[in-house]
Image 1 (cartoon, rainbow, N blue to C red):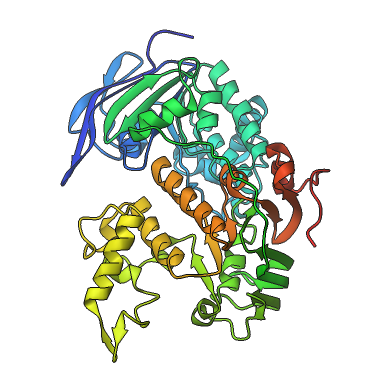
Image 2: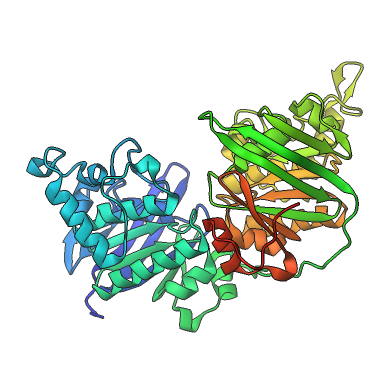
Length: 510
């Protein structure tokens, strides 16, 4: 590995009104090196990478590529300088083919007019890096892992020597992650520099050569996997010890509190998103639903909570069938819901923290008397909940949209967990929140389990599902591929189920 830096960012500072997003940050990447950038949400990772990619200009500091100072003023400029970025949310046009997406923006005679040389080059790059994607396939036809390969191909086609990978494993199954790491190691062998951004600490330890940790816009630590541990990295991120693994003690499950029987649910495109699905969740247990995004998880949750019609089958809460599916009716039967899109379905950004906390219970005694709101009782409850759930907010009258993502999620969870529900549907509870908030949310979920709630946990984070669940059900294209008991949890077996391969560890759900 060459010791001459491919990238050297020195003293990078970027200010926005009221906040210093990057404060004198240094980052050096060598050829053939995986340099991980680690930090909580809001730590400054995205701002630093947007500066590197020309989306922001730094207020202070310099950037050098291969020993020469450069000014990067746009993504086009970054691409011309040999920098590629693989975004977490893919930047592909679904109605175009892989080859057409690669060709977009190339200009000249290499545009969409003559695709033959482009396809030939795509096949050549695909073979070298193991990125097997059909150049003639439309993006909408591809699985998530294939779409990511198309994104990487697009960058490599443009001869990128330095690649930024922003949460590249967030939507992949474990086998797809393994395949991606093979590709990344081939890039290393070819001398390319990689900046890897991930919240998954075991991946960081497996893949990285160097690790730079940001906290509150500053570099809080620089280390290597051989000199560190997951616990040490978490502490550098958060500024305090973090419990990464927890012991979930077995406990006897009680009566069935939530059940779906032979459920069919139609998706937004008119397809059957959930097919003949049956699940039972008992008091005092967490049943995890694992699967890659887009395999019916959202439609299942919305159907249970009455937000989406049921085409066939039945939802039962506390032994009583849901006769007229609607959120109010379902809530009155004892079900609470934490939706995956907190700002679309879970909270109203313009409402205050207090108003969002009271969205469900404001009509009940003692918060309403004789048709009038009892403001003192409301204030007392909201102050108690914000303290109990560690919501960081200036006051309970602060607009919720002004809070961080993790604190907005805590507001939603405080409301849903505090209304005495016997059953909970919790979807993507820690998506987009930092490691400290995720730790706290997990604690509250396990408290609800200990208190006897029946919890259906839907998450695309397999580590989260395996850590918290008593049983795991794996969904693929809206159907149950298998059910795995906690004693049989194995990341490879569950990953295979997520990919559609049955395993001896799995049994069909009853």
